[in-house]
Amino acid sequence: MRAKILLQLKPLKQFSIPFTGLKIGKHQFDFEIDNSFFDAFEYSLVKKGTLKAEVELDKQETMLILQFRIDGTIVLDCDKCLAEFNSPVSIQERQIVKFAEDELQSDDLEIIILSKKESEIDISGLIYEFITVSVPYIKICEENGNGQRCDQEMIARLESLAVGAQKEEEQQQDEDPRWAALKKLK
Image (cartoon, rainbow, N blue to C red; front, side, top):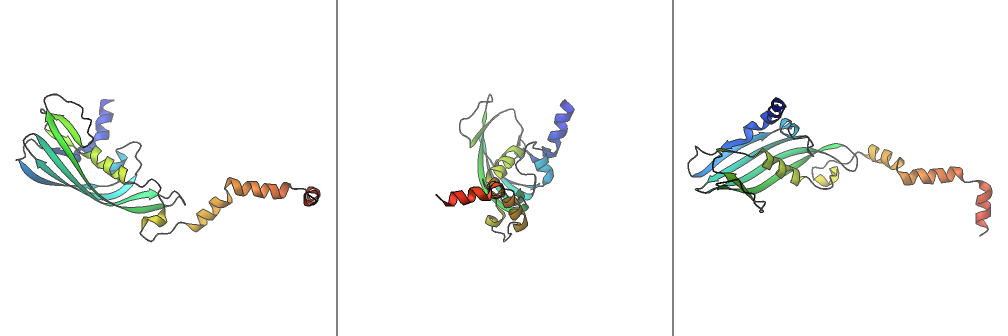
């Protein structure tokens, strides 16, 4: 079981920043994000993408301040026509990491508390969270702004299979012409 867990975490090992040997001040880290990154998260909303993450780590005496800039494209499925489309992503976020004697929990979502014994911070979860939160609630090709239009053939097919269209069709077929003549008398 342990070997399986280690295999799953291996693709994300590159997203750990060892901060112990760094001098106080600002340090720049660049990360490439591809499909293997999203594969490491079992139920990921995003399955494909090509992004670049630039992380500025500002090391101070009692804390770290991480500035994230993530740019690139992710592949989403259109909620209207079910086609895949590229959606541009541009994210800027900040995360504060404080050190404590014991690992305390912080109520503030912008602050992570690490033990003073820690020597590195894994930012893969943070990057994944920032990307996932940037996904629009309703994903439509046409509203993406890249000029892509929804697949009209698929939309026509979906509309023909819609429940309302089927009921109207069945009503027209089931309607007896004698009853139709009686309804006209009303």
